[in-house]
Image (tube, rainbow, N blue to C red; front, side):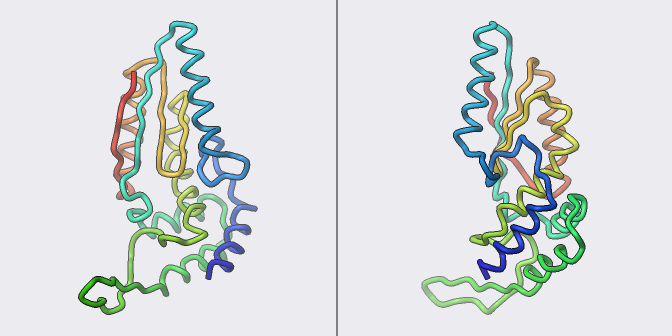
Length: 185
């Protein structure tokens, strides 16, 4: 299955363009790049003695909360051909799972929400969802960076950061997702 997932991912990457603000699981980008970019921004503002306000958002159980209908919608909106949407749907609609514990295991059941844990394809599918979700809010924020399920929103005014945070919160909640928020002045 992993090999097939990698083939599908390679084909999706050819047609889907993820925004530059996403650093997670993107070719030629890393955590270090995201940290470096944020540090340079903060140093620039500190040197100029200008105000910079940032808030950090960590999506809670991000992979587990992605509604499947949202995934299909985001794939289509990103320009994924319908045949690949159906391929991914097939991977999800035919999957079953069991829960193992010390006293035995449950009967097989279908999981109807979330991305597959441990899948080679899930990180890119999540990036597609985040890209579409963020499209409506990232244009309002001067500096937004994402690393998979972590988001940093920065602005010169506290009010603008709060407004942008509220846009993110609304966009996330509308899709059944939730974030934990931590501010930094």
